[in-house]
Image (tube, rainbow, N blue to C red; front, side, top):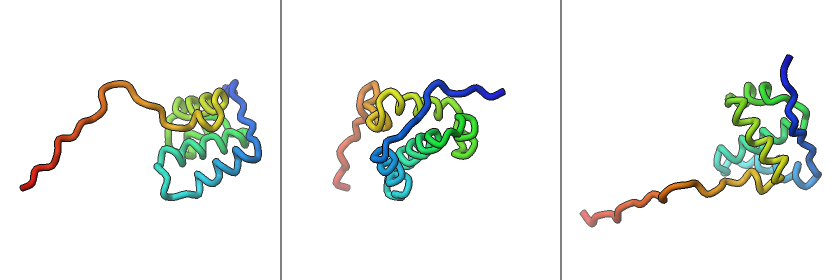
Length: 95
């Protein structure tokens, strides 16, 4: 028997419109589109395993984004700063 997520997604009209706009934009980074798809499917009551299968990703990834959305709403889907030293690229040579 599949487990039910304790994070139930209920969207406001504005959140739904924002996520649907992201899903339709082909110029957005792929990660942003997938996150929006995850939340929209979760709002339809689809389980994490089914969402993962439809989007060809892992169930843990779906769980993470569902949880972050429930805790932080739309800002939770944004990319966060990462740890570590930022990448440094050498200047181009004039050759």
